[in-house]
Amino acid sequence: MDLFGSPEAITLVDDAEGGVRYWPGAVDAQTAAAWFEALRNGARWQSQQRPMYDRIVAVPRLLAAYRTDALPADLPLAPMLALVQRLAPAPYTGAGLNLYRDGQDSVAMHHDTLRTLAPGQPLALLSLGAPRRMLLRAQQEGAKAVPVDLAPGSVLVMSHASQLTHLHGIPKTARPVGPRISVVFRVRSAAAVDEDREDAP
Image 1 (cartoon, rainbow, N blue to C red):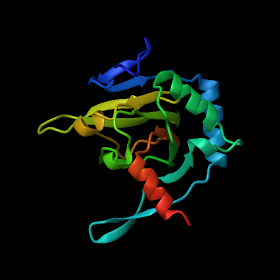
Image 2 (image 1 turned 60 degrees about the horizontal axis):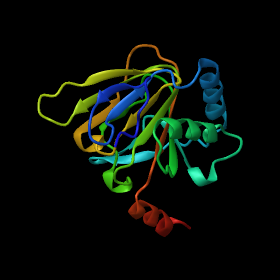
Image 3 (image 1 turned 45 degrees about the vertical axis):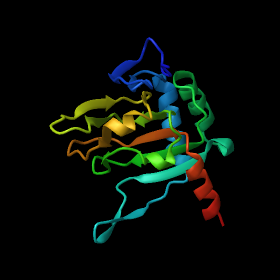
């Protein structure tokens, strides 16, 4: 079943679950700018550290996270959820926010952690702020990365199946770029929800 049917979508990867599709103008410029300012000024941004090999390193971007059943009224996350529901309907349970402050903030090539995702459900990524280049690469020897310039107000949707076949990332850049926010809506797996309950104070 094609979850992402829309005449405005650009298909980047095709698979049985809808693949990877891109809507460059999902939100008008004025709304996208207002949403960016509201999130930049009002989200609960945090810096994090993660172990990498034999040392602890700072995550090169700021992060925030919200459950979709408890979205704060002072942030425009509810209309964002409604937007991605129209493009890629799914029972989204969480919104993960990333703030890329400049060209030195990045995320390495990766696929989302599969055990934390509900099988068969998509991930929907809304981009706000300055444009930023994402790389998309098949997980096969010799595959070349495909660049996708994520415009403000754009939505990129990735099927669960695409996380098994492709990697994606936002590389660092020496070019002067403004700040960017991504809002990623996911459907968490039952196992991940159970882990959240066990970790709750």
